[in-house]
Amino acid sequence: MNEAQPAVPVTPAPHALAAADYKSDIKPVWCPGCGDFGVVNALTKALAKMALEPRNVAVVSGIGCSSRIPAYLSSYGFHGVHGRALAAGTGLKIARPDLTVIVTGGDGDGYSIGGNHFLHACRRNVDMTYIVMDNRVYGMTKGQPSPTTEPDWDSKLSPEGTGLREFQPMVVALASGANFIARAFTGDPNALADVIVQAVRHPGFSFVEVLSPCVTFRPEQKEWKKIVRSDALRPTADVSRAARRMLRDTGFELGVLYAGERPAYAPRGPRATRPVADLEARFEL
Amino acid sequence: MSARTGSAARRRLPRTVQEFMAYAYAMEVEAAERYAELADQMSTHHNREVSELFAKLARIEGKHRDQILAKMGWTSPPETAVFRWETPEGAETTDYGELHYLMQPYHALKLAEHNEQRAADFFARFAAAGLPADVRAAATEMAEEEREHVRLIQQWLARVEPPSPGWDEDPDPPAVAD
Image 1 (cartoon, rainbow over the protein chains, first blue to last red):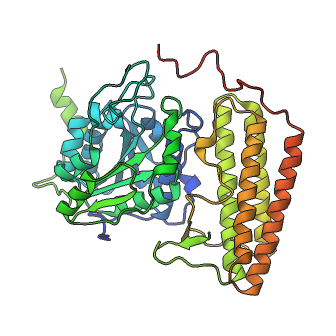
Image 2 (cartoon, helix red, strand yellow):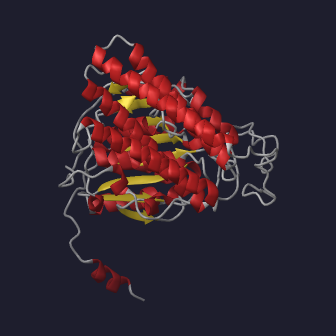
C-alpha cells in the first residue's frame, strides 16, 4: 500500500477526540436498519483515528438519503445541489487546501445526476475523498432503479427490470484517473473506518464505493453480509493489474483495489486574492 | 476467534490479563454505544417502548464497561484502537441491519440474548485456548458472567409478550411506491 502523506499536511487535533465528538446533536432520520448508519459510525471513527479537528474537516454532499450525512457530523458541512457535490468539494479544496475535504453521496447522486462530475473529479485528481453509499436504488424518492441497479430487479416502478447493464463505478474511476479506489461494506464499520483513513491519507482523488443496504426498498440486500468477502483485495499501483481485477470483479470483494502514484492536482499560477464581495459587486445587476 | 492487531498479518492472542481485559472493555464500549444509537433510531421513528429498552440495555452495558475499569484498577480507558475484531464487530454489538421500525420489545430482547450468548462463546474460546493460566482464568470468569447475562435476558423475555403474526404489517408503509 502506498503510505504517502497527503499533498497538504493536515492539522491534528490538539487533544484526542473520541468518535462521538465528531457527531452532531442531530439524530439521523434514516430507516432503522439502513446501511448508512454504518458510514456515520465509520467516518467518525476514521476522523478520530486521524485526530483531525472538526473545524479542519468539511463534508460536502449532494441530494439523497445518504447525502444527509453532513448534518449528522460536527465538522463543517455543505448539503449541496443534486449531483454537484464533487464540483462544490473541488472548489472548496482548491480555495482552502488546508481543509480535509470529504464528499459523500449515493449511487444516483454520484453516478447518474452527477456522473459527469464523477468522471472529471477522477481526472482532475484533486486531493479529496469521495464516499459513495451504493444501495442500487433511489431510496429518497421511493425506490426507482439507479445506475447500479441490476437489470433484472423487478419492482413496481420497474416491472421485469430495466434490462439495462449496471454502471461500473470502479472501472470508470480507474479509467478516468482516480488515484485510490476501494470498496467497503457498512456491515463492517471498523474495516470501513480503516479504508477511509487510507483514502484520506492517500494523495489525490480517493474513491470509496461503500455497499450500503437499503432495507426498505431493497430488503434482499440484508443478505450482502453473507456474500461480501472481507480482505479479499490487496492494493496495487499497477493500472493494468487493477483493471484486470475490476473486470473479474463480482462487486462483493472488499478492500483497496488500486492505490496509484499520480501527484495530486496543484493549482498553477497566482492564487485569487480579491475578496468575494468585490466579485459580487462586479456581477451585481 | 480473538481480536486482532491493527495489521491483519499480525494476529495474536492476548498474553496478559491486562491485554485480555482491554478486549473485554472494548467489547462493552462498542455494545453500549450501539445500543444507544439504536435507542436514538427507535426514538426518531416514534417507537418509544423499544427505544427505552435499548437505552436501558445501553446503560447496562455501560455499567459492565465501568465494572471492568474498576476491577482492573484502571483510572483511564485502555488503548483499544490498536486492534480489530476478526468478526466485523465485537461479539456483543448488534448489527444495524437487524432493526425494524415496528419491532417490539421481544425482538430487542432476542437480539440482546443473541449478543450475550455470542459474548459468552467468545470468552469461552479464550478460556479453552493455549493461553497463560491467569488469562484463561479471567476468560472463564468473563464467560460465566456473560452466561449469567443470558439467563437474565431470558428471564426478562419470559415476562414479555411475543409478537403476534403480522407484527410488521403497516397500513401506511413508508415504502409505498404507487
